[in-house]
Image (cartoon, rainbow, N blue to C red):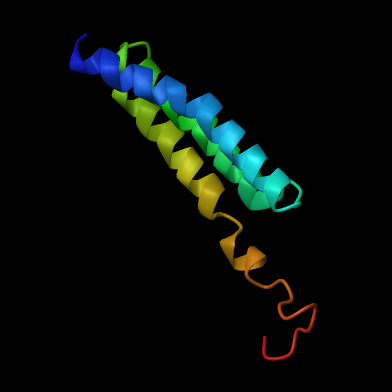
Length: 95
């Protein structure tokens, strides 16, 4: 096995592994799939796919940069809104 094949195999295996881990963690903690969990699942599905396509030379460097930039923008786009939610059992004192 070449180094590229190992990287591709690890990238592809992270997709189902991350999905299973997130779902199991949510079931154990008895929480639903929230915004952050969905972002983790989306990232764990999207980023390895980009890596494999780039390593197989099916997409060029500019496309990879655009896709990764779009994903980073997606992940960080709503951080300021997410941090404004009430804490301490719904009390918004001190915000």
